[in-house]
Length: 442
Image (tube, rainbow, N blue to C red):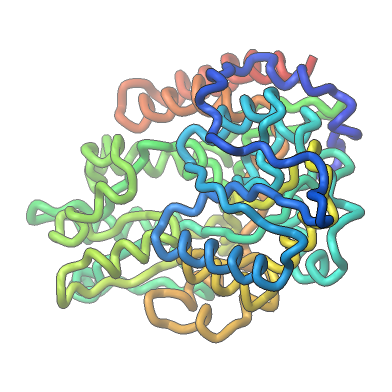
């Protein structure tokens, strides 16, 4: 538990979650998300599992695991419900308020704070089996710990890495970084300059969603942004360590011109055609984008996975918001739901989920599995980075979704495009941001 974290999140009350949040129509809730609230005549129960798996491989693995469970446990049936990452926060908020929430909830750890403090998620502290608690390291459990409780199981995580054109790197004669000897941020800037020219940019930053990428990478330079005071309240600061990574991006786009301005409004997938075509030599992306590169790269395209730049003292820490599995507080069959989670997250099954999503498991046993440590497709680079992943700065901040959407996203977009300077960025993030957070901490 983080020092100074507020105690007893459920004591804040369910209705308080709606302060400052925009509700969506009840019709927006996924159909069929409510589960029977009593046992059937034969003693069996049915639990709804809302999965946010979206890649074909991942959906197939999740459905196979549900089918395997149901075949072995006829008295505890799991009903698979397909959800979607887009709009999941509002969808869950409405389903919780309407008493229609799924029993088992797939989400991301940086989306859980409001639901945990609002009393909508079950505290799993006394329910999780010893094996599962011991297999996942403490720094991963911190991502789902709010107050005195644990409100989700972190099971998949994704470091940010650099996808690079290997041919261009070799031609430029730059030192390839490794997990043991990464580039510094200054070295990364120098490499981008060497790779720029002949109609090519050294780097493309796809920053349609700039906030989590910026904050998580800034952990390597000591950036924290959110600071909890002795009174338990959180305030936004934007000090020198927080500014280093944003300044690199800003300067690459606006001063050095080593980064393409046109990619700032793109998602990661949008940059891949330019990457394959040699327009961008490097693209910082989430680890799972390797799947799209494998599927879409033209024949003979040589690419490699590089670790993200490190801060002072080769600090490779990154903030990460793992995918999580939680149980609704209203679920009347919590022990049965936990039994399914324990099955789903056995080491062998966690490896299957990781391979299906092209991500890293949080579990130590799964992370040591040979298929996840091969050099092929950069798996070994990712597993080497796993020990540096830490709880993202925003994890336990109530009101973070609103701060991100209304304040930080437009502010970073303006700064990276050159529309505003560093002083204006800081004022927006700090002054306007603290006004937002204050409404959640009354």
